[in-house]
Length: 127
Image 1 (spheres, helix red, strand yellow):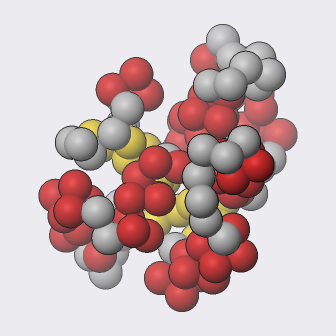
Image 2 (tube, helix red, strand yellow):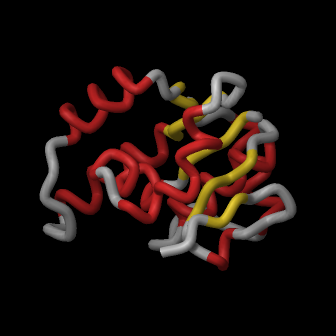
């Protein structure tokens, strides 16, 4: 299985949040490839700059690299998929929409705790 973590699930996983325990078997399975979007790094940097998150972006990226998660770059087909979802990419929620578009375009199963992002292939993480 190939999965893409949304930003909130990524932050919860890195923090050891017990809510992620329900997904732990899936995420740690040998056959599972776990992706983290470069869009999440952009989202986290924006949260840090806005004072909504206290974290060190470099340390978070190093933790993801050590975990074996795979960084997913932003490509043109992802932007095309965003247009198909009706997102302009310029609104505050555009980080979530872009990650959703990436999951659709790849295809990857999106792991999210946000029920608004639940597409046909998403996995829901209960808060």
